Image (tube, rainbow, N blue to C red; front, top):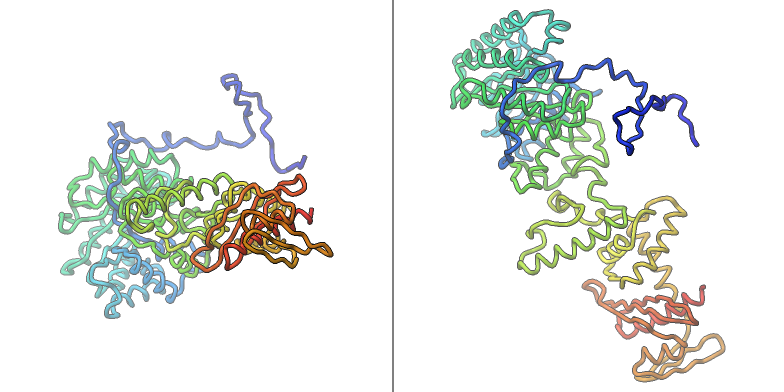
Length: 569
């Protein structure tokens, strides 16, 4: 047994309260050092409404890749990459885009100025958001950057959680509230006389901040900025560092949703991170709890474990029959662009977009998918609609890969875990061969041996090469001739003659073959035909396959293929 000397296998006594089926033992990890979420922040008790709700429309999506995502990159985007990412957002249909932190970076400042000064750079229905800390000089620099933009949200942020107040900022509750109010008032003064400017506030680390304090600060800003339905403020509530299960975040959002003043004049926004791996769940539950706007990044880039993934969120809605109001019809182009701009790869198992997410290697999964595709085609035919328009319901595929611009070639792939269903599907979809079930079983054993020996995946073309070598190329090069009810075959120095009800029966008789099963079909829409023969030869049951432009000759070649394989042993 391999040993791992750096690991400390748990060896403590099994807890007395543990059931017999659970022999887990206490470990040496110092879990006692950490406080649970309910001890760190108190959420007032209330009758939750969010568990009984459903998401029936998309929130306003706001990508923050050009600011929050960009600041998390080892190599931040240069202007060309920032422009390419921005253009991608426009093509996908985003209507509000956070483009940078212009007071903190010359590159960001110049990029915002470019958007503000180049005619047509920002479509008429798109709003630009910029980020600033609560300092007068940084706010001034931000307003210099956005001069000329017709629609802009100036996003003010300050950390508000007790740990940040005490350790980072060195301010008490009232001191920090005064700082925020002063910065917000300066923001309002800078916006006087300017149409199209709105305000956003983020109490950073909201999820670790006392809810009553967040209410005090946010309600104060709503009044200060004189929010109205036609000029709403955005209160953005970040889970800057995930510290609890998603239901806790949902409770926090619902509490604010139900207690914010001038609620019709407030856009309630969320900004989840992914430290616990539950960013998507946090965002979805937050929308159930009253959030109307979600900030995140494509494929979840961002600080530490990243921001919430807008691709997963939006496509989760799509698979529930809800229009995400964004376009993902070429997911691979989106992924390539993001990988280029971020200089980071998207994982092969990433939801919806990874190279392997629509792929089945497992035999049982492959068989189910193959049957699912056949059922889907049947349903589409019964409805009289193209398969792309028929209701989607295929086992193991929560989304039709074609919706994302992908074909079905990579859905089923073959390795040592694959079964007959997947192998048969690849031969059928790639080469038009509809193998009889017992032949599927036989050939799958041959493929299994090959993959076990090599230890690697077999491509569709390699699979067909195995099939050709095993069956089609097994036809012996024996001279033969036939009439309507007779056939002669020369095997070495011996000429064998047989008679039967037809040329195929006669050939089988000449070769001493007992045909147990025969079937044939056209190969796709082409001129060729393929025939399959299951035969008993010398007490052994053997399959043979023949391919020819003539149906009759395909049958003859299938008989000869079976004989050739039997002679191979």
